[in-house]
Image (cartoon, rainbow, N blue to C red; front, top):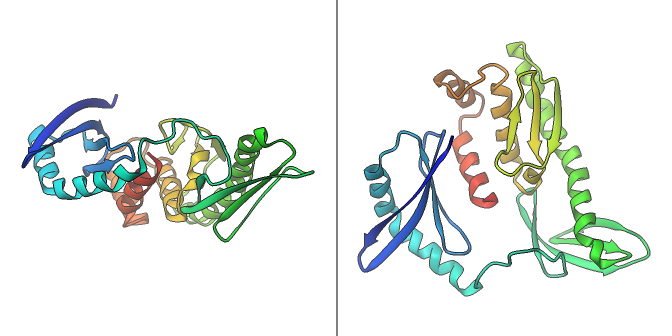
Length: 235
């Protein structure tokens, strides 16, 4: 089970508070959230002293990030799905435009996602339905060549399905079924391909062993870059 703890360091006259989550990963990830909170994802065997040394090295960057978010004020706790809101789709930022219409439809062009709806109260539901339809198209499109490539290892997923998940980007069941988180539709293609590759590696190595990471690195040499990017934009 993942462990979470709180800690802080003194950097000059500034105290930097942060939350540490110990997870199954190789490197330390530092994330400054829009509300100014600092979160770390650390390897399970990382010591507190190692973490503090890393925070000291990144302290100036952390403070710059916190200052960047200050003008925006506290984040909105609940999306209202109204014109002017910002939404991600395949790693790009789009502005939402909600208009009353005689039809219910969603389409995008340039940097705008337009929702036509008979009742504006249904804009959120329409957008989520559209996201799922796009995920069904794009996830399978991105996964198909990777799955075909993994046939060299004599493996193939029983099925590829989409689910809404809170704490996982994807998972592979014992019977070989792979599930991808619908929320990945907000991420860039390479991040989605990383999750697909990660889960396909589990068809060969069930656990996060040395052999698992060796295979993942062989198939996607820069996987840590895309994992870190995914965590930064989707936390």
